[in-house]
Length: 379
Image 1 (spheres, rainbow, N blue to C red):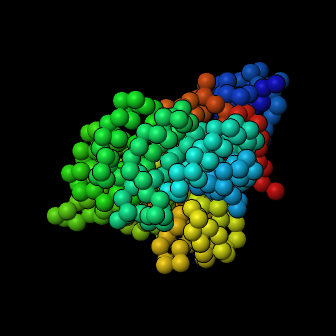
Image 2 (image 1 turned 120 degrees about the vertical axis):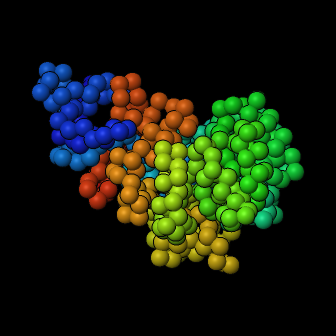
Image 3 (image 1 turned 135 degrees about the vertical axis):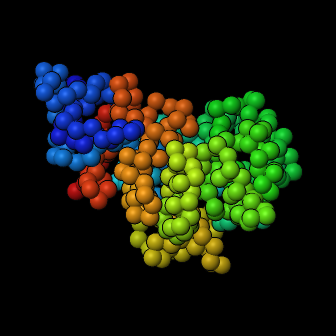
C-alpha cells in the first residue's frame, strides 16, 4: 500500500515546497499539490502537522553509537549503531573502521560483508576505511602502532564493500596506491586525511585520483601563508570535503571560512564513536581508552578521539555559526553525500529511495523513514 505525507514543509535541493504531498512506498512515487487529493486518497496518511520533511541524512564517517563500534566486529554492534542513529535523522551511513591490526580490520570487514544487510534501522551503504595507510605525524586518535604501508591485499578481497578510504598520499607507496585504486576500483572514493603532505604533494594526489578530504582541518598539515599544507590545498581545489561541526574539532570562524570556500562541496559528518547518543563516561576507540565529558571525547593525553556529535546537532550548529540556510545545511547531508557516493538517495524526487525525516524548527527529529517504513518516532 502506498503512503502519503501531508502538511509538511518539503525541503528540496534548492527550495522549500509547501502545499504538496509526497507519495511513496519503498521509493518516491510522486510529489503532488495537496488539491490533487484523488492521487493519494487511498494512501496511508502520515500527517506532518507542519513539520519539515527532508530526505534522510547520510553520514559518510561514523565509527559507532549507542555503545557499539564498527571495530567490535559483531552483528549486534552493527544493529545497535543502525538503530541508534535513527534518532539523529540518519537513514544511511558508511560503517567506518580504524587503524588497528590487520586481523582486527579484516574481522570488521567480514562482519560488515556478512551482516550489513541484516540491520533493521539506518542502512549500511558500505565501508569507510579510515587508515591504516596514514602518516604517523598526523595520526590523531588512530593508533600509530598499527599504521601500515599501502597495500592492495585487503582492498582486493573487500573492494565491492569499500566505498571510501582515508589515506596519506605522501607516505611510501602512497601515490602508487592512489593510482592503482583509481584505475582498478574507480567506485572507491579516495580521501586525503591523517596526512602531513605539503601543498604540492596534496595537489599531486588530487591529480592522481584523490577527490575528497576527511574531517577538514583535523589531522592534516595546516595552513601557513608560505606553506599552505593539505588544508590550503583542499581549499584551493574543487574536491569535496567533510567537517565535524561540533564547535570542538573546528573553530566557529573556520566553519564559516570552510563554508564560504567550499559551498556545495562541503559535507557534514559526525565521526561519532561508541559514546554517540550515550552518557558521559569512560569508553574506548580503536583499543584506546577515551573519556567523554561535556560533549568532548579525548584520549588520556588530551587528543580528540572522534566525537559524540549527532547529525541533527551538526546541522543546527552550522546554522548558528555560519550564514548557511536550512536548505543549504540539508543539502550538505543529503544531496552532496549521495552525489559523492553515486546513489539514488538524498532527494525527494520521483524514483529516489524513500528515506526521509521529519523534524521541527529546532531540528529535533520527529520521525525517521527508511525504505518507505517508519523506523523511529519521537516518544
